[in-house]
Length: 497
Ligand SMILES: Cc1cc2nc3c(=O)[nH]c(=O)nc-3n(C[C@H](O)[C@H](O)[C@H](O)COP(=O)(O)OP(=O)(O)OC[C@H]3O[C@@H](n4cnc5c(N)ncnc54)[C@H](O)[C@@H]3O)c2cc1C
Image (tube, rainbow, N blue to C red; front, side, top):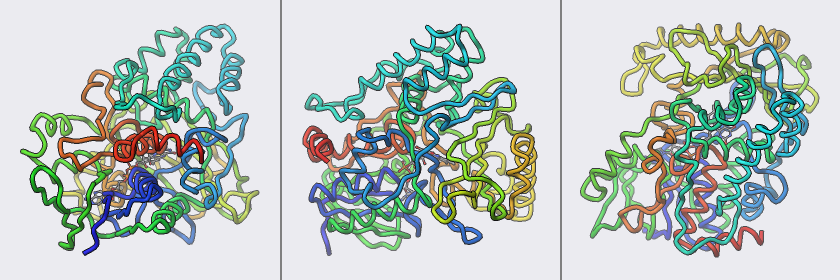
């Protein structure tokens, strides 16, 4: 039986980036993925002969020399995947209070644009930009700076409320909302989201975002090629079933088909609540298990994937975030019995015809419980009822979107709908959560995890451990792999390409 140096569990961005780093570092790596298709939320799927993305619309810090660009250079991703630029002058457009706010790429440009919209708020805007700059500058791993030997994550802003900090900067409610409008990228709430979470996601997107052309699968395939070219293996459709633990060390793992996989070290990137179901006491302390299980998960999503009639809608390299009410913290105001307060509309980047869009995606947040009555133990038990409600929810969202984008909606040819249940089914996330565990500022000591565990050869990575999203997962992968190979060695090598 092959013995591996590292077994990585889960093949989302957390798993693939950890595996690719370790493979590049000369370790014999195997990736274990439960689903038949690798990629987790990075995966794309085909409907109506077109490719659609699951959980990847844009990636932050992709400008030359920025964090993700350096990671992708180091791994060789940039040589294999084409990324599309966004409109520098208006990558995000916010529709709020019957006005539009065009937000440019680059912190300085972003600041100038906001001052232009809110001239009397110049000092608040400068303070805000200085603050997110200061927070992000303090993150050694994100800045790929050599760090103290036993570096562990701690940031004072993880204990501060995003909502309160923003309200403390300005009493202008409209500006508060515009500064907070990206909260939907982490399903933020006034009650829980930390300013640290807000700052890093806001900063990385403004700093320089891009998206892969023709979908996330190109990224997934590039990662897999790199892992294989460096001697690694990716096993799909055969998940982790149980651990064999001897003397408090994982000796091997059993997969769904009872195949045994042996490795020296294991990196789990699956949801920690799923992990502690597999490893209970005495290997993990009861307090650790309770701590993990007590953390809430962010809300799920509801997405309409559309094909467009050919030659009808011009391709747009912009994201359109529309808020129908007077408060952008839509997850805080969410109710299952009312129409969505928000949707996000985009035309994904593709190579076939650059001038016109062939696809459209309309995204909103949705709680898993909306479809509860049709689902039991993760399986749809009333298909007719489920499909009927799915269509009703889609019609409701389409009619809201039509008020803002009538041409787009009338250009739709076919639609495919993803509910919170779809996200759970294809990505194995807890209740289809879009961004993993809530980073509650009131529980900062509990919601961030050391990549090391009590089991010396088990490490944690993925979006739940430190920061949400693709960039957050990649930061954690560097931190986690650094625990095995030496963080400063890894950082130096990433910096040297
Ligand atoms: C609609 C939507 C849009 C999004 N847009 C963006 C965006 O534009 N930019 C951004 O940065 N982020 C975005 N996100 C969030 C981002 O996709 C996620 O934060 C990130 O991809 C999560 O990566 P991960 O590796 O932690 O987890 P996942 O991608 O969930 O991967 C975990 C993997 O583990 C596997 N697994 C589970 N159990 C087992 C087991 N027992 N054995 C083996 N494998 C197992 C799963 O099948 C899955 O493949 C979006 C999310 C959604 C839902």
